[in-house]
Image 1 (cartoon, rainbow, N blue to C red):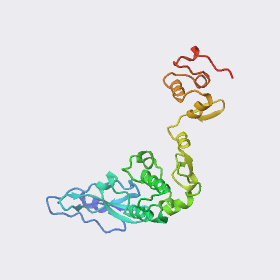
Image 2: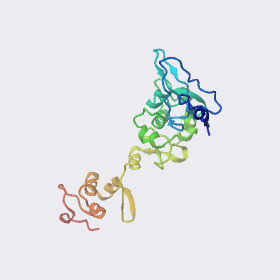
Image 3: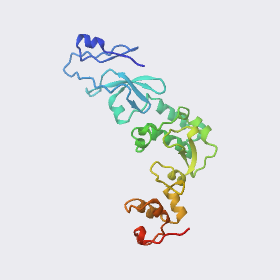
Image 4: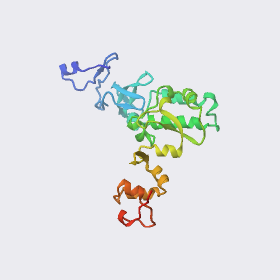
Length: 263
């Protein structure tokens, strides 16, 4: 655990001094000019991609004269680095630099990402990392934003290739067996796009006759259109039994007005 010592500040009632992180030199926050600004602090423990805030960094001055705050970060790779707060909050910076280096190295691995010859399995791996670790990725909120991570082994493409190349086909997508757990060899398989759709968090499960199935599967079994079943169980307010056993009509009706399938 990183210790922060602010007892000296309390003793001298000096609120302008930044906390001191144990094991690191005291931060130089002294300033005699009128352009000095208060240090903006991001709470210790806040995570941004592969980075975790462990302390306050030294403010810096940009080439245009503007000053900006920094945070001391611990990267998942073990490296410690001071990083400007702006790029952290915007999602532009998600690692100490190791993520970019790793991606560049992996692009040359086994020729799976040569110029103009990117293999589909490399694209699967790269997309998986982006949606879990890049705050600016449109899908981050559904993956990294809700705690879905990529295991340490799969941070390197060659390991992902070794684990997942067997069984790979271009018409398949990577699927997590447990949607609440992250990406790892133990929790992933190759699946058709339809199979993946049925396993989505948003897929509706319906229990009837001792079975719990996706509404799409019930639609196939009963021959009743998915949209009809969805409407019956939704705004029409039908019971599950009525929705699944009542013959479909061109015009939607109430259960009592429709004929019931006799099995």
